[in-house]
Image 1 (tube, rainbow, N blue to C red):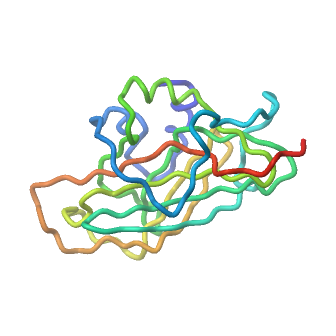
Image 2: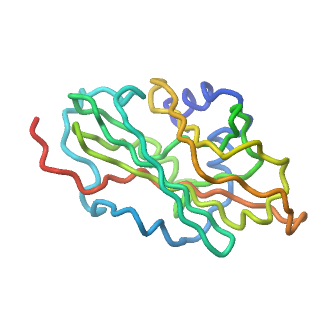
Length: 206
């Protein structure tokens, strides 16, 4: 685990689930992504912004949210827009937890979508650069949430996102609240986290 990852894990407030637990969780196969978001082609995921650019802070970013679901799975998407007047970097692997309104984390397993443990270690060093006005997004996918048998959640869930290099935390409210009905007490549900991807950006004017 990299120094950046260790630092961010240490500052995540009010949560017992750490990125170490996420990285240790078993690797799972691919699943469909939210259809409402268009990603930049994978062959050019990082814009050529100056290497000395800062890490994005909460004040640099405007967030928006979308959701989709069906057949027991729910997709929770977050979009970040760089609203500052300078370029900045975000981490490729979002440090994100689902919490309630009081910041208490849900008792679920997390892992990074389509990445083995060795892939996660490599991707943890990667960054996504955002020119002013550019956007990036990721999706949380909660599989079989109807089998979740945790304590009832008060209100809708919130995505708690710890930004790279200890620059702050962003809270993205969702419109999703897991039910109290427990379909499968012996089962365990998991939440998949996709890599941060650029949306198709305009031509930058540095």
